[in-house]
Image (cartoon, rainbow, N blue to C red; front, top):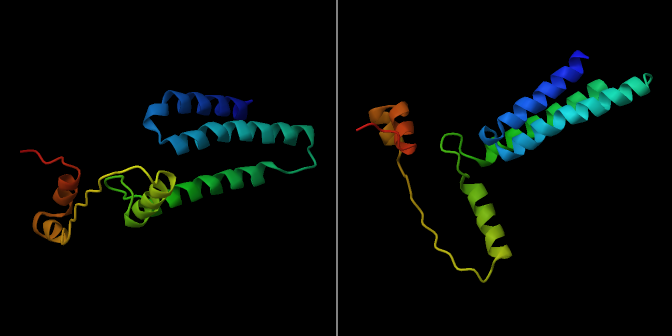
Length: 134
């Protein structure tokens, strides 16, 4: 019963915090308790089949891989795609809408490390996030 209560609370907390959670992670967090309940029900119906550990391991692996993939393709500080991901997205957009015209603006922050060296990394991060207090 404790497990079922935990799953119900997990779903409620996830739904209440939907706006604060990344959309893909929200889907994972909402689906995991449901999947876990189904696995436990199968486990109770067929006690000679061991599924609980396998299902939990697979679910954690899926969550880990999703988060790792996001770290690889997104800048952790300003939450925008990195160069490789940007070019992938641009290529997909051109393939999907070849007749659509658009303007591409490139802002280069070459030698930005000098800002970090001069003012410190925290101030450099604040500058990138536009959180400098005048």
